[in-house]
Length: 156
Image 1: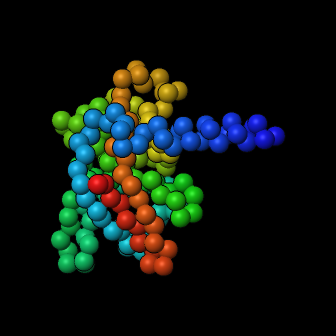
Image 2: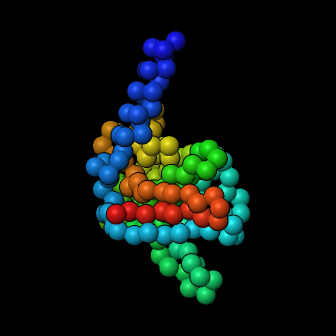
């Protein structure tokens, strides 16, 4: 039984570390820090197992929306109080700033139909359209503040 736990733990660590800061994402890296109020209307249907895409966000309710990320941001919530964030830009079509389409735990390139897993940012290898050359999604760090139901998404 300990052996199975060890194998599971080792596999988990490999998956988590596989697309870190040194990943092969072709999406440019930019320094930023955004705070998202998860009680805002943009997050109304945001719950466990769902994702949301934002291209801009109104930080102080002054009706001025600031652009977020290189091409927007995907925020995915796999479990309670756990969040993953990625750039909305397709790593295959960076020059065109092609935005991915999100569907739950997947992000899909509308041009090539390559599916990306939002648990780790990798292309889904069981995808018939994946040729092995697509890079990872650009991942961003997250920190959840339960007292204010606020999520910080940052990259530096």
